Amino acid sequence: MDKDRIEGAGKQVKGAIKDAAGKITGDRTLQAEGKADKMVGKVQSEVGKAKDAVRDAVRKI
Image (cartoon, rainbow, N blue to C red; front, side):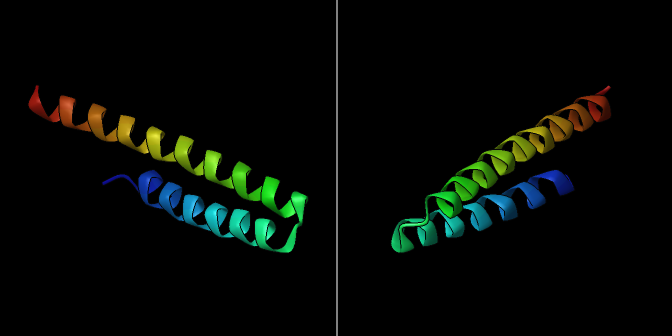
């Protein structure tokens, strides 16, 4: 598993926590940061998946 997938998952969790904390406290800035962190994490996770797919394809050759 590519490290980007792991880091991406971590960022998604961090973003979810920030998003929830922002909702609870009514802090729109914190909530927006949380949503942005989740999106960055999703993208990073997808990059990791693509790297894994390429690596697997090359190994089959």
